[in-house]
Figure 1: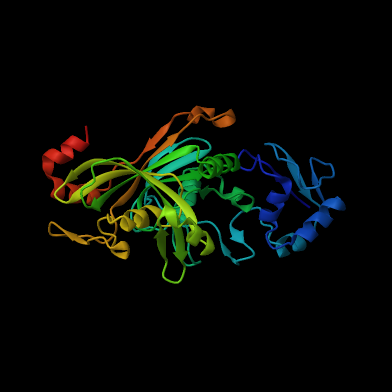
Figure 2: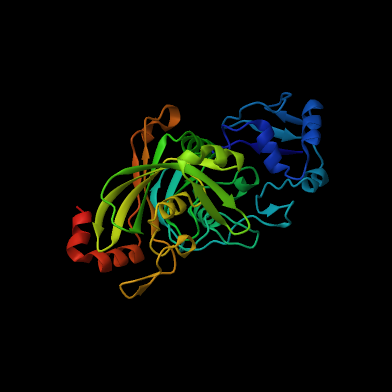
Length: 345
């Protein structure tokens, strides 16, 4: 027999979800059968798996050690039996991000350009693994808890887009962040340098579809709604505010209303204002003797609205991340010192 004591990291999820994580190789029918036969109990009583777990709850598994290992159970949290490999990231005293805000449930970091947010294939090294390693090394998340709960990032940025990434340190934190992003009760602001002189605020509507083969998206205007729906396009909404237009370029603040792959990049390029450095969507890669390796797009601000319950303390809170050095240097080359200072006031 083995027991799992629910901690603050796992509370708030359903019992069946926890069992699926711990016995990761077992199918649903096996788990339900064990619950019916009382081979798995919650606080010494029969359970059906729908129960919401609270801190201090005890889950007992009246199964042989061989059966538990066979189905992936491992209370040390150091090995994923399904994958046959360690799930504990390599610890490192330096991490590829700056911490912007952290509490018991939430973590916000500033991701540099050039790093994946989450793995695309098994061999990738991503920000998500670095976040987990940081939380383990700092003592914020006990290593053994990885058997039943893994912290995770909750929003994705393109590899070469820098800026704010939010992560949940507990189940409650993950659920909260997932909800605010899904329900759009959080406003997301990006900063970019585009080609062309823009002087007025604007709201962009349209439709977008991704070509998985080329990893590129295509945009249709809002008046092509019939064609867009027939071809499987998804509606997108983007708004922007020019901060300063000078010498054929504009520094923009963009509000991402919907959040689709490459949305800002493709939407701006569609209207004839590609982001500087974004070769995929027609942006110049050389400006003022500078050779750019990637698009100058930065997720710089998250603004929370009215929050209730456990996370009411996040009401109207703003998380901000400074522009990366390459972005600032490029804008300085374009706009000059006086224009740069004006935008920083």
